[in-house]
Amino acid sequence: MSNTHPPVELDAVIVGAGFAGIYQLYSLRRIGLSARVLEAGEGVGGTWFWNRYPGARCDVESLDYSYSFSEELQQEWDWKERYAPQPDILRYINHVVDRFDLRRDIQLNARVTSAIFDETLDRWLVTTEGGDRFSARYCIMATGCLSIPQAPTFSGLDVFKGRWYHSANWPHEGVDFSGQRVGLIGTGSSGVQMTPEIAQRAKHLTVFQRTANYSVPAQNEPITPEQLAEVKANYGARRERALETHTGHFLIANDKSAMEVSEEERRKEFEFRWKGAGGGFRMLRAFNDLMVNKQSNDKAAEFVRSKIRATVKDPATAELLCPKEDLPFGTKRLCVDTDYYQTFNRDNVALVDVKTDPLVEATPGGLRTQSGQEYPLDIIVFATGFDAMTGALKSIDVRGVGGQHLRDKWEHGPRTYLGLAVAGFPNLFILAGPGSPSVLSNMVHSIELHVNWLTQCLQDARAKGARRIEAQQQAEDGWVQHVNEVADRTLYPTANSWYMGSNMPGKPRVFMPYVAGVPAYRKIVNEVAADGYRGFEMA
Image (cartoon, rainbow, N blue to C red; front, side, top):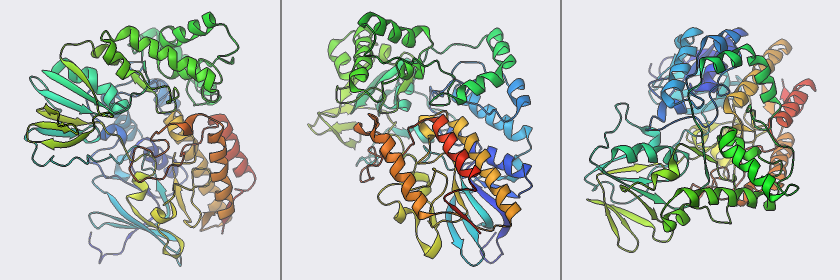
């Protein structure tokens, strides 16, 4: 479609076909609104379409990281493992799309380049890279929090004679590491998941680490038919209990402080979380004050360091893998692994500290550090993360009232009302973005909460005859202040994490997610709706 043709008229354009975009399409159809999902990739699935690297796996349990809107869907789908691998999640998402006949309203290979608000029509003009144009009353950004990879910035990659890959744009056909000398840059969640997988196949693996992070064992295992039957018999109750937890996970939380129990009881609780209770994010719920009390946090941090030292045989390597004392436990995204630390006991694996001797360039034969040390490599893998939470939105030319650019408004950090809307950008909504629990919660739960809330809001606006819904500047200012005040009561802002934007050079340091928890957030947004959408103008 060329620009000479009139734009396709719709009630809503949804940008992104991951968990959020798919459920939003389903929900808008249910209330009789016409919608089209525009997806940059050649398949649905969002982050689970792009992140196909070896070992890619969800760090939230599969029985919770799934939709709850359809009882039939819950009953018919059988998860195979406690933590689902990427191919299983992608199969699930495709099943949902086909089961609810959503594919006909999803346009693939349609990267959105601009979304411009027409103040006379109160509509958004949305344009794709291919020149397709859409006019919609509502523009709903389901662009995801981890969808714009941080591009490698090394000089010399053009002369490197081997191959290089980024974890977030992995070849569909996979990569054969057999007989290869591999360098892996980055030790966040992707790097931690890839390390054991690559080590098993490569001739040699060199892991380049700048900052050691905490990783806890997933204790992943197959879900037995008996376990599955028991969950399905009580799925509703499981979901209800999850809604009342801080993160929207089905996790047992301890209501004691780490400082009010004996050393023996503390260690016993940590051991239970590490092993007995099933590993993963359960460690963050070992005591009720780990994220607000530095003394309690120190106890958890030291426990994890003791586990690293007990697992990794070479003392020097173990110390390099131990996070420093100035990084509180859990303030950077906690990694959930299978045999990560054990992998450094292999003869074909080496760990290199690039904080003391930074990597400066690629050479024809590998990578070189500042001191001149060269590492010969056949393959370089970048697991260097994302421009988190704001990258996808700022990559689109979004213009609101008076032609204001969203990227200009967010120059000093993201500003939203409830994480859902932005003052000066009427009829534009964001799903599970900055200013909401988002990445600090079970994302699928937070997505369902936002979609349900927004769908009801649009239904209520239609009943009122309103053409325009806009967050008020005062409400936005108050919410941004509240999000920061809540964060400042915790240890989160003390870490240089992607939650703060610290992994992107030049990005403002602002704590982006809402840390008060899922129940507190749900109560607030429901009260806003009950109070006639307080903080919004509907006209």
